[in-house]
Length: 483
Ligand SMILES: *Cc1c(COP(=O)(O)O)cnc(C)c1O
Image (cartoon, rainbow, N blue to C red):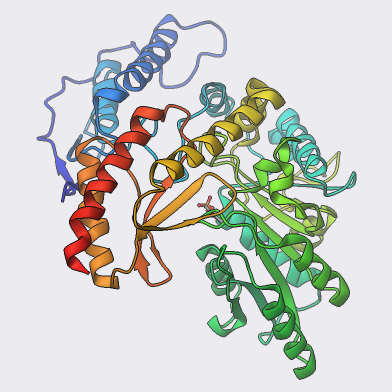
């Protein structure tokens, strides 16, 4: 069906042994090495060419030929290295293609790419301040700025994490610690039925039984039903069962729904329950004054996950865990790092979270945000919302059930199909879309397969949206006899 059919292995390339003394293995500490500059330049040019031919290739390459995985008996020269890289690049998913709208994976922000290169070259370590003096401070300052901007208060701050799953896990570990529930297997976590799978994973890592996760049904807009949550919390209180946290989602993964954050926060406040908001998709809307109303109530969170790697295009991974009281991080995770100099500011990066050695992911976030400016952020958000409205309007006349929210995600499936028919429809339609270099995803939602468009790619224009509508219209008409 036009899906990649696995990787083929290229015949072992017959490279000559490395040409002597061309590319140095490590940077020269005493002089500029022209061979090294040329190599990095060529790698950069190769990447720029890959971006520049993006629209001639499919978002999803059908076959990839890989170079040999194992190192050869001797090292390769720079030309062979770049050739090897090219083979992997040829088989890569292509987020820059205008038809790429399947997932929460937009094109990379260009300043963020440059910062990623510099980050690799600095090779600092956020484990400890002496291994990343300027970068540790930058991470703290940027987390404090973002937390305050999102309304968590002027004492707020946080820590970077390699992805939203890890941010969510750390948030729940901190909540458990703050609530004195370490070692209490009865403790419950409430979240909507549409909450991200990483919440269930987090509880598994925390050693809690699957029954510790209490899903709350969603309403017709995909938001958590507050009355149901209130009843379940009352039930837990009456039975004397402790609550570890409530997780509200600001931007669900299939439809971008926002839970009623203010109402959930009110329930949590009355009962003194930790409120974690998973804003991996939606929290960035709070950075723009013109869009913050979409996620009203976000500022009530005790802890908040933000994933700038999603809509803003910060290169992967980029996630922050922000807390109203960031001291709770070190209170939970600090071990004293006995082999390090004492911290001279707040706390070592490795004392504020689960990760030990980690790269300075803050650099690409910081530079990317500096490149955008607040106006650039607002424009990115606007563009994504406009494309969602345009696609919704183009599909409006068709017999489809739309699942959307206020954000830039739109899922749909033909009205009245049985689950097996909806699956068949989604497979066929995705295939027809891919034939036209349009990539949508195919989530199973509320028992039926949907097609989902995530409209965060700034290159997606009217031509692609109209083409999607055309293919979908043809497929819906073709699926009528199935009913
Ligand atoms: C993507 C996502 C996550 C997980 O983030 P990763 O960076 O993929 O680990 C968590 N919650 C929501 C709502 C998401 O969409």
